[in-house]
Amino acid sequence: MVSLVLLPGLASDHRMWRHQLEALHDLQPQVSDVHMRCDSIEAMAAALLAETPGDLALCGASMGGMIAMEAVRQAPQRVRALALLGTNARPEDDAMRKLREDAIVLFGQGRLRDVIEPNIAFAFHPANATALAGAYLDFVLDAGAEQLIRQNRAVIVRPDARVHLGGVRCPTLVMCGDADQLTPSVCSQEIASLVAGARFVQVPQCGHMLTMEQPDAVNREVRQWFASLAA
Image 1 (cartoon, helix red, strand yellow):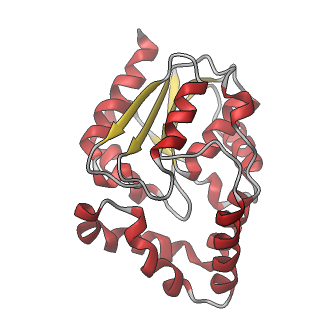
Image 2 (cartoon, one colour; image 1 turned 90 degrees about the horizontal axis):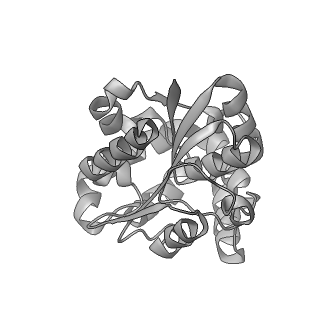
């Protein structure tokens, strides 16, 4: 049996997967929290592999996708399928590193809202932001300053996943929103180009938070992707 594991993005939890947990309940998905307990992408992936026995189908969003890509590097024989939603295989660039480091300073001062609230709009397509901003803000603020600092530091020093993606041989789904401002579609297109046979899906009227903004499209593609294992 292959276990379906959902990997949340930075400062996110099971709430970002609410629609998937409901619609895909027959697949018995489980949401990992390794990003809340480890200090690096490599350690998060290692903990996931150690704590979840057997074959895995990993579905990761944003930072969760980075963990999934590292897990398939560490244990290619165990990762039977890979779904990567709005993520980035590249290492951190200088501009984003500076933005994260500045944010870390403010998080350390307890100024979470000063950072998060002005940037909520970047996470969503304009048509979806008003309806979803409150739910997003809730789980990000609930994560707290310590988690925001630790997880941003982990993303800053993440490995370059591009160097091993050419060796991935499992069914791979790559999805992104057409209006994603945090991980533009070129990042997902690059991942899909590196993985032989990957399915690339660009979701219309969608920003970075695919699972919340366009849950029906995500659920349909994830179900089809998971079914490919049986085929």
